[in-house]
Image 1 (cartoon, one colour):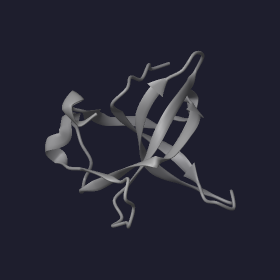
Image 2: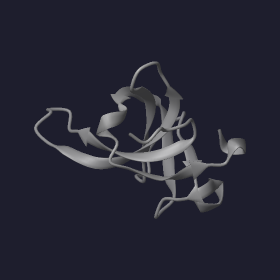
Image 3: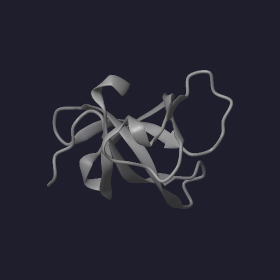
Image 4: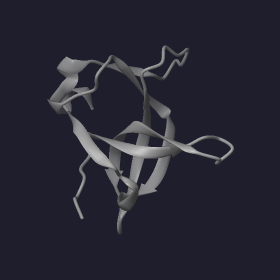
Length: 97
């Protein structure tokens, strides 16, 4: 199994609030926990009214990147098993973390 590190942007199946379906969404790896769990932070390309949102652009990436300007939402954290990670998109520069 691939190992992930803080600062990487990954894609996970993110469930709708009614748990009826899931959609592929990017997330930022904030921490790797013991075992196979990660603490992830939601990323959205939507324009949002969120005082905590942090904009990320192509220049913020050390490797890879997102297709459009997006917002990291540090008030939207979740824990996920590494097994549900679909793939890695890239890695943010340390200065952005």
